[in-house]
Image 1 (cartoon, rainbow over the protein chains, first blue to last red):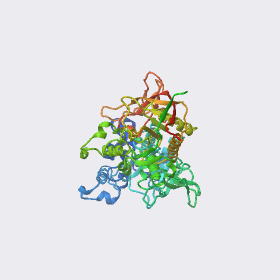
Image 2 (tube, rainbow over the protein chains, first blue to last red; image 1 turned 120 degrees about the horizontal axis):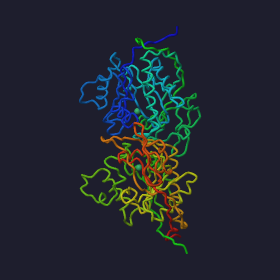
Image 3 (cartoon, helix red, strand yellow; image 1 turned 90 degrees about the vertical axis):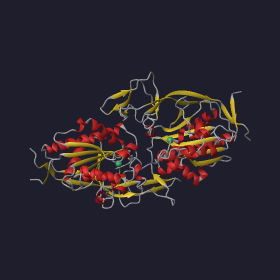
Image 4 (cartoon, rainbow over the protein chains, first blue to last red; image 1 turned 30 degrees about the vertical axis):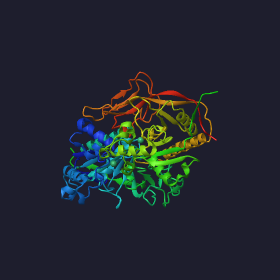
Length: 313
Length: 313
Ligand SMILES: [Zn+2]
Ligand SMILES: [Zn+2]
């Protein structure tokens, strides 16, 4: 008999929009579902659409004081002295009280957190834990349903580069990142892809809760290796821009010696790594302030055991 | 003998970047040229690169208090009581004192104002006056040099929709609008196109000052007819998004009965005008707050007389 992981049924599911207030696909979908919930209803699952950063949404900006999607660490979630806290840390504590507490039995089972990127990443799922068989199975299911559309999986469990996401309060956090879409606009094609990802995720949860067993699977993922910074001048100004050969080439192979930046006086800067990598988040608007021109990843294969619901009928 | 318009030589030329602080091609180019001016130097022309809204650039936002590119009207330019003025109105008065005064003999001859759009407009020149033979000749020259790349001309002299631009203090205002580019990022392809437009504009001015006569020409332009608003719900939320068949189709013909919006519950809204039009600024991020989903235009042909410099050697 094959190895199998069993889980309790997934009853508490949230769909977060507006974690970044200018990433409008999730904002628009969550606001729509708050009024018209039929599309996301599934039997015996409490599916809760929720705007996580309403003030940032109101102002159509990424955040008010600090990036909400970076403050769900134990230190911020525990901070007292409410008067001195940033808007987002206060908000994180509130979200944690409603959908967490993070790491507890009461925490939500699954949180789908909806984001957009200016990078040409297509539909992307972000995995936070390579040993979470349930989430790997979920991603495998979504990826198969999305075909022939591409649905890539980004694995971020890098010891320094992993960050404390809003979704991380769930037992099974699911990052959904769809691009390319400029900040502050809504593209119909991007909206459609995001909507499909959510539909397939909920369909999987329904099937799972109803007792369907998902056999062992392999999942191709892009594992975060490193962030590449912009070349800067002495005064801090950007000295080069993403080279046109790299622009819009997220997930494609980048080899040593290939161009990555162009300077304003016409020089080309090449990739000087040791081996081929797969860039992603290429020219993401929000990452200029983080000084990330792109992220390099390595393609690896994860395997998941069969998963099944413990007390299915 | 053919009709000819004669002008004084064009000695005072400015290149404005950062009129909208999150439209980065112009910001980056102007900052580069402030330190490395050789590229924009032309004999006997004072070419002055200038950041018009430095605080908005610093914050990487469109504006601080109000849209700088809408306040160069006589009323705002004359306002006193400096304490109560918005940052941008103060700034407009300062810019007008340096590069104007608007409408005076001392005003700069030509101002190239560099903008980006999230719309798929390619390289676009914006004309404010259909009887300005000099600017029509300039645009005709740039357009020919840009080929085979498209360079479209938008004519805005609509009695209600024309607005008081930053460049309007010059005798010959030139709007340069290049897209698609998300706000807050720099794309190499968009940067290159903007740089080409500026180069050809300066080359024209040099040739003109040196006595070259430009023969009569015809210029195809898209004349602004109307702005189309987003359908809204009662609470003000957007009820529909740009239809996928219209997205990225700037300048293409749109016929009555063709789709323009999709509602979130899957309905299609069609264009109900009387005749074919050419949409532009389709899904421009900055126009959500102005409630403009796109602008419709009509293709017309302008003619310009021959132009020549009055006192060329
Ligand atoms: Zn985001
Ligand atoms: Zn602009």
